[in-house]
Length: 482
Ligand code: NAD
Image (cartoon, rainbow, N blue to C red):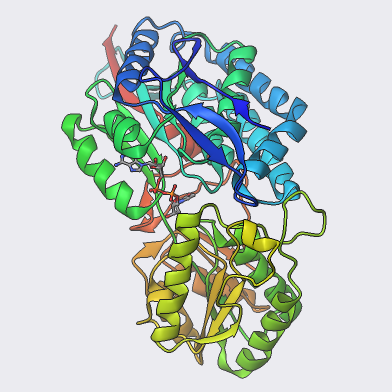
């Protein structure tokens, strides 16, 4: 299989202006699965101009919200119709299991449906006016031309969190997916065209961050950048976006704590501690990589984690019994390997894993063994830095206060978990944990109406929920003397 795909600019499917292409690799076996155009600044400028014209002519922003909502809901239906094809494509491109990708597709359709349904629910509000015989109203309007930049780990899920609210609120946009995983995003642009989104409203430019991404971030014709990715890139984008004081939404990394008290449901906590990390081989911003366990159950908990991990089945995402696929790329595999090496050098104890697998079948792809470190302390690189691989660090605590202190000891503040059967204690911890989401007796649960985003260096703004609408709208006060 070698798909030949294109970019989508101003309603046309086009190759790169430079004629350059990029091969897209299956991380399970390194086979080329698709060839896509490698766009650069030239087509990014064209796409921005198309989005600008489409916004300024008002064809989409002035379309009644009810009609925009119907088109966004139609996209949800088309995703459901093509779910199997999309799920298989996502798994080929990322290595994750097809079962997981099917779950992603359900979530993605749910996000389009949610924003399609609420598109016409905010008609603004009348506020009290201090002047007799006057009317004061507050309305929300689209921001304008949006640049949207997504990462490789959940390619279409992250794209849907940006596309659906931007479209529902009447913006126009240029999306730049990760250069290594663009396949399902390309497919959804086909579905948006089929659903009736007018030409110029949605544009897709493929290429690298330093060309396409940088052009979007600096362009004075782009009004907003919504970015999901790493902190280092987020900082560059903040600087670039200052050129015209763009609105910014940043969903950055996480180094998420998972606090396990001795009175928790032990089996549930073990299940969720594993699910919280080894889902998509730890390549998830909300991975609960810092497992923080109460001293009295620490040894039993580590033992239970290790026993389960030893039985983990690694392999092709297309095999039904595979529990964990490969990492995304050779470069990322090397990065994770160095990260684990740093943990070993700093004194963390490898309980299981710690290396690439020996199985020759798995050496065709970018596999790394699920790894558990015990004996971890907050000063270690593996406890402080986001590794974005299948690695759990285990720390011990003896008091609730210490547990919260350890949980908060991070530059990140994306998400965290608390496992206990004492709901009052759980609520107390949740109130003190400095992060955008706290799960109690659960980990890694997302749904369209719950806002998602980070405290501290995990980002700025929120996606999903009603707050996702606020990211894509400006608030206007109109005062009128009668
Ligand atoms: P990355 O920052 O390397 O790349 C993300 C995107 O930014 C890619 O499309 C890339 O091409 C682009 N980019 C790179 N340099 C750029 C530049 N100078 N200007 C503009 N765009 C540029 O991140 P990644 O490796 O693709 O993804 C992993 C990171 O994403 C992790 O840190 C992870 O935690 C984070 N992430 C966060 C969330 C969240 O919801 N908070 C979700 C998923 C992933």
